[in-house]
Length: 229
Image (cartoon, rainbow, N blue to C red):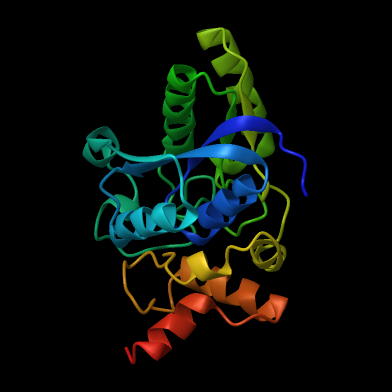
């Protein structure tokens, strides 16, 4: 049996592949899990339903969905509008799906909830090896935010990012190891908010590449096929 890290953890759960894998990774390491999902006006709102389903499947102690209209009001990302998705937008070669400040805000609010729960551990699916290169997914950013939260709350916080240096294929294999494959059948990745997924957007292509390289059939596609969609 795997040794537990601590009694409880707050897990950022978007309803996507990475956060679902991290939720099940956390199930192996913490006795009690609290899942936190954000409704920030994302175009792929189907992931909110996915998060609800996956949280129930994982048996978390509590699942909260927080409304964050501020990001939607500020705009500036294709994920917050119906603008065409571009893998480079001209600003630092970042894709136009980058939502400035998103992970910084999410982790800070997760830490605030953890403080109320007297919990010291956060788990997130940030990964700096993804195609996107989002600056708020890098380990240096997470380390800096972790220290800022400690100083600002006077509360010991550890931010676990089990996928940080894994390729998508490696994360698929990790999902199998931690028993997340059934839940991944209900996860959502497609930027277009479609089920079955569009298979064309950058997120769909990255997910497909990971499963192909891992030699595993995507359980989401299996579910879609079985539903004859």
